[in-house]
Length: 272
Image 1 (cartoon, rainbow, N blue to C red):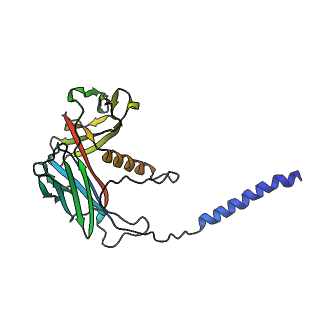
Image 2 (image 1 turned 45 degrees about the vertical axis):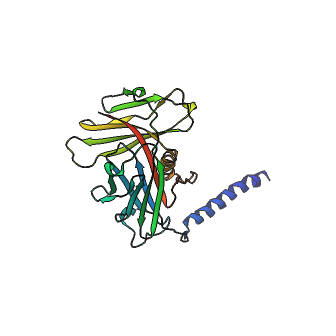
Image 3 (image 1 turned 135 degrees about the horizontal axis):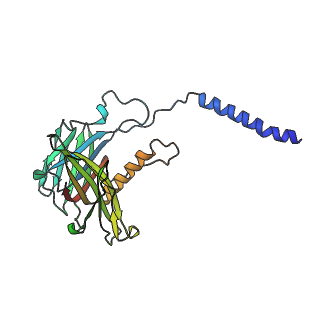
């Protein structure tokens, strides 16, 4: 009886393993998921930028092939894009060199405390969002730059006093343009932070990795909650993408129509 008791679990495991093997060898046919084509607009408005840049995409099916007329990499090149501001409505133009839509700052006239709306229209679809340029409450003389240079990297660490509010949002990004390069600059988001009491008296962002022999600009910005939420959830989605055990992630969306982000940043800029 003892022998039988010991054998039954083993037999169960063998049967279970064989059953699982047969299951995984089966070809699983996924039914087509409902697909609603939507327009995606991404833009962060900043008064410090000489050019306001925006990207426009169209969504693809989660399962199966993309439609025959789906644009390359989902990038929409012939959308109608407008910035609506207190000064009027101004069209963006598509710059094929960069694959983005651009509007000169001198035309857009972005100002602190003003509300702006960006609308993209393409093939019967619309993406539209609004934002207000936030106040820049970081005193410029309170920003501390620490050189953490070593033999391999040229790094700068930025810190500033933590403000008393629990709803302060910050964005750090770097602009790099090689001295001998006449094309567009490269912009990389370094960090995004929600200021709160738990962080202590000082906020320290991730290190800026600077490019030797190039014009490097460090941007320390006040941003909006919508911008922070969008960047945080988008990064979480990217990290979880290859993890089959991760919880499904939904990217935050504060748009009136369509998907994406119409965000804002008001920045101190420091050149190296």
